[in-house]
Image (cartoon, rainbow, N blue to C red; front, side, top):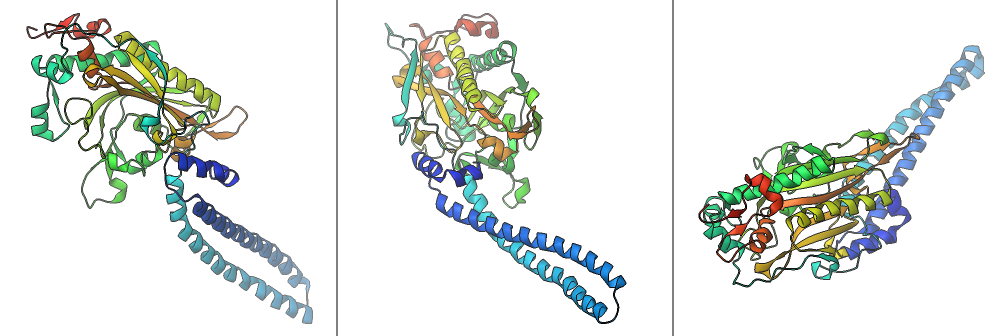
Length: 445
């Protein structure tokens, strides 16, 4: 959620930001409603001040009445009667103002939830992922001296996964990981988790993947993005008990401190989780329907940092968190590139986002495997995550998130780039300790 005070002071920043992100929200309507509500609240404050003044006047009159007599006493009694009747009139006016405010609030809240965080100035302007800008490239795609197989062909021949049975059980974009495919999947996750916990000092967490709407809204996944989430439960259940399957561990890690005030000395909070993720993949009909690239269920090692309300500190953490993902790919010796996402590809909650794409021979292209985002105080405002400074001020925190590694998508470049002419696959050296020291996956085992 954005800072309404900043919106009032810099409306063009939000008008331009919404347009650049291709998000249709009526900023002028929001400002109009906000002005109306503030006017009503000013009048309500005036009524409260008048009530307080009447209370003082009644006290003063009561003292005079005790000493007065005759006509003076009668006049004071009449004045007292009028003053005592006034609070009833004011209460009726207050109730009317309250009703008007309550009528405005739902529309204001709905509009506020739709206003996106404006992109940072260094984010390139563009309309879609086609306009993202490559900023760095590492490694060279492998040149094969034999006809390479796709990960689908390798998976079938080495019995690493079974898409046909997955679809039979759970529908399209479903799969089973089997045998060495399941072991390789777990090896990747364990390597990434160990790296974040034992080498980078992140606190390991196991988080709920079934959360209430409040959690999805607080972390910025609702209302935009609702079409990507699976709802779980009865159709007619009360709104407060409706739950959704999360599409990332970011929801649980960030909402862990929802509606809390932390001490500045506690920051930054550095959390990492391995969680199962669920996405409907709405809007991708017909795209990547075979193999492991675009699926409904996957596992991801996710990192979240909650830090001080300082833009430069956020930018520092953004670079650092991204470097962790790069280190994973370098240890796996997988060629990759970094893309600075353009304004039209950021989504509502990000000030800046960098995608990491890894080379996939069967696509003859780089495919997205990671994404690192900085959100400043956007999530913290929605989530109520604040901290108290050494000087006693209470500020909203900043939050950032990044994929350390996601599987089974990362298995695509591993299998395809490490395949051999005889149909076997060499296990990356960094994964061998998690594969019982094995060096190769082959039909013979």
